[in-house]
Image 1 (cartoon, rainbow, N blue to C red):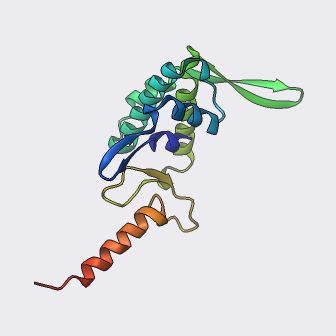
Image 2: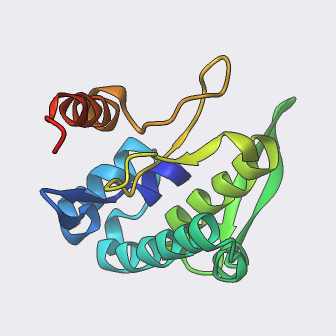
Image 3: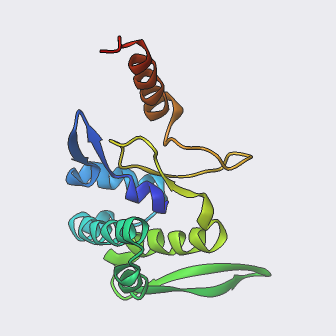
Length: 163
């Protein structure tokens, strides 16, 4: 979920695209991740953007200050349903729920697999991914997109006559 939020901004034909510009896309993102927020989409979108900026600062600059501000907006409370434990997200403002959940997922991910969170190796790509490959050597956000473009570029450079 955290990297999905980070990747709501990408480049298309060299121009930046922000999925969160469209409120229906925000609604779809929330639904895809099973998160509440339909009652205040604009407020949720604002907080998701703050969380996304904080996540990007952590990933790209190693600056975790803004991430900690977002993480400070909520917590989980352990509860029991019969003999089954579960966690309830408790936030100071319901509009923070999705943003907090994404940043908390990032904190867990970095705690478990910091070496597997990577930026796509294509120089024009801004996407991040979790390398779940067996040997941990994945380089591209997708082989079909960036990986293929890199291979085509190398091929074209080899075919270009010297001079």
